[in-house]
Length: 171
Image (cartoon, rainbow, N blue to C red; front, top):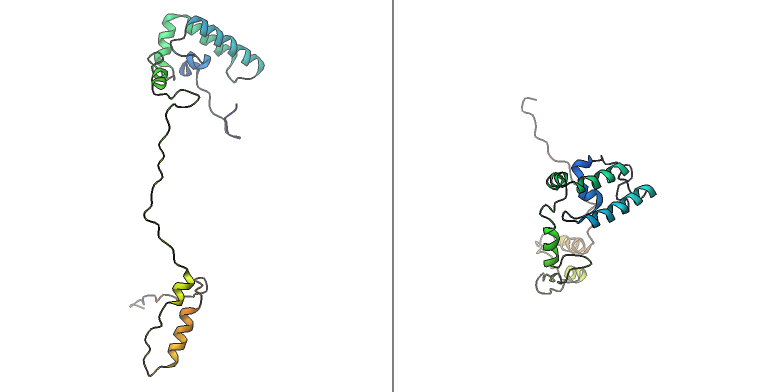
């Protein structure tokens, strides 16, 4: 499976930094039989073009894991975070985090937002709005205000006057 993005090429890390454990895909406490089986599988994948790991790096990883001194050096210097001989895998198994799925059920409670509140109908609220008190000397304003309050409001049709710019006293 190729996880690279189109047009993006990642720089290859040196094999010493990646480490023989990740190249062969073995845990740090792997025995000789496991190392040989993974080495053979990686060689096959490299020859079939199913792996981007060069064949010489696969052979290097096998040689490094066969030599006890080189294996200790690789154990300390490689990217594999399982530095204490499979401790992370054992922890994952003890907390049931190993594949295919955890043995515990995740907790995902429904968060309550509060009591259910009925949302009023906007037309009903608009019909209940009272008209403001109008002075007796302006009787036509009452009808105009009533029509204005009942008309739908379109915020995009409102034009605002330009702001008053401060006048330059010097000028």
